Length: 486
Image (cartoon, rainbow, N blue to C red; front, side, top):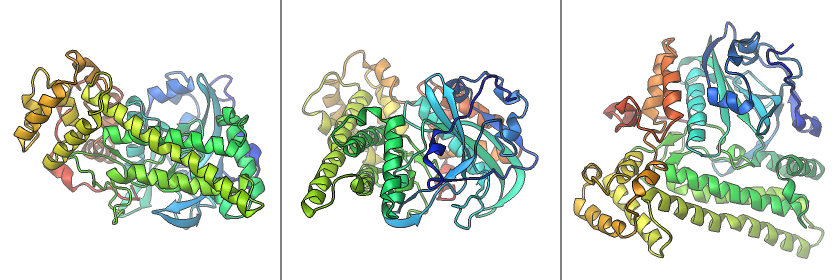
């Protein structure tokens, strides 16, 4: 029996057939221990607060055993990495366990770091404690910020050594989402000349995750437009909180518009539109200001993958089909622009809409960039600037220019805007130095800071008890680097 009464583990994805995945057991962690669990994610699943203490839970989420009904499998996909076709990829260190019938609808659970799969490409299939803590904390932090994201239920750890730049220890993070389907799943079957499999995948995804597209004249076009709009909403939210994904390859893009695959991510400290959070991104392809353009590029790659689902028998049909797909992708641009402006209006506390709002927002960001003002703290202090502008002024080099901007801003902001602004401008985000503190303590065997930071990040719009959680980063934080191995 499972430790959670009445729990079943259907896996609708498995119904697609073995062209789409390889079924195999996990390679578990020896002598595992709990690192952290997320009460919020457990609640999302509809699980009791003491689920982790139930019999077999630790071994199950360390990959050492399975609960009855679980069916571990790794899916195959392909994709473009740093703008270059990378060929076949797949779940190289992830295993789908199955689905839970959660209160809000079916949710899939996936182990990350549970060993090699046929898609590991000469890698070890493991995740290390450092990267697992970062993904766990950021998944839950983004959810608290209201950003669409995969969730993280727990981390288990082990003394098993894993070689990265240095020798580290292994961990497994359990990820949760309605679906882990990526742009790359569709690219795989399109680029490998498997139109029947591509259609089965599209029909399956529409049936389970986008049923409103099924009745459209061309379901594939309707699906692409839906994905384009969701992706625009997602990236606008990233930009509005200063979040950099770091590796927006097409195989890291969710078809549900979720933040997927937390690797070399980062929340900006000093505002710089050209900020590159990924040390491996030497050309800056995934810099902060380029994220919207990259998302648009990735949507074109998805459109190309969906092309075989439309009429292409003649040159005229192929051209017309291509135009319809491009129109669907183009929905991204208008949606992103409107979402971004709407989020900036909220962050600035503006009332109604005015033709000058875009310029007002752009000018403030230019002032921030010129002074390299801290992104999160600047907007937080702006929230209180009607009553006390001095803390905000302390962040800027050209205070006269800021004062001139504030005079314009006061003509548009509501007198009672402070509370609304504090509700959208977080006090705390997962800065790299905060994550690093939790990681270093965990590497010494002390997991309390992971749990403490999780609680703080679950209430990002509240002032934290420890002022250091919302303070400017210490000098040593500037030397921190994250890369694709993070």
